Image (cartoon, rainbow, N blue to C red; front, side):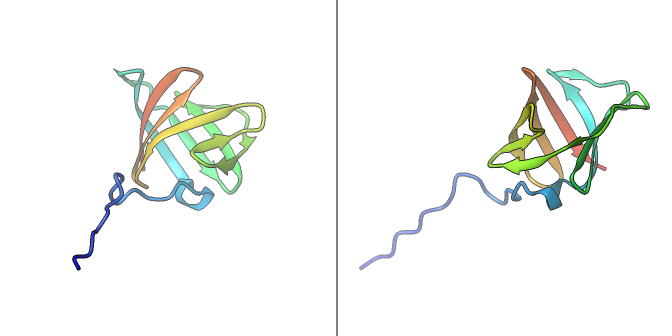
Length: 100
């Protein structure tokens, strides 16, 4: 009898974890438009900080729940993640980010 191999539709995708998010993520595009402001998302321990054009927004604690970055009062939906690049939906805006 022949063995049937079933492959996952997601190949080599990294697991979204608190550990895999650690560091700085450069915002490349926001809703399809190139981000010229050198904006970053920073993940340090259990803190998430948006660095917008050099201005750091107060940190939020975050947890990972499935494919969401949960800030408690709000969830960022992670649409794609491979450990080096990420696509996420925050407040209806689609972000493309690359780990620095």
